[in-house]
Image (tube, rainbow over the protein chains, first blue to last red):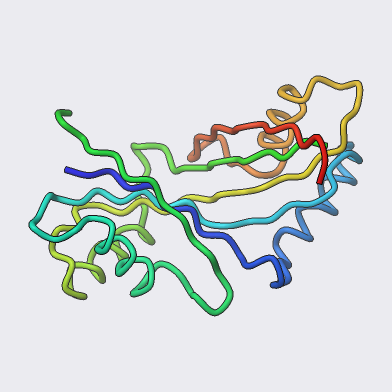
Length: 84
Length: 84
């Protein structure tokens, strides 16, 4: 079994309205030190082992469903779960 | 300047409809090895240095705006940005 952590972020050049709203809200909520907030997705996957290459599979999963490559970037970490 | 990465996840006991939908969609999309998907938030904050304790500040930011403590857990990593 693999546990995969995927981090999806908006590309630097893409405006993040949710992050901008959070920045303003936090500055009003007594946190004037907050300069910037960017909101992305954190996705945990559990995958059974197969003969397929796990890295290739995760890239295909990200491109196929989880990530919009036009506006988002992603990176991931793969852990092998030996026993649970 | 601090760069803070916040990972927000649904508590284990909370049903994740978005994750369930992603699991089913991936299984149909030729990834039968996908057992489970959980969708959370990945938030990057940039904060100016102040006299306040940075860890306490980030906890307060999370509890004050970013995290719903009833249904979500969070953890964070703090990096000090020396120069950019």
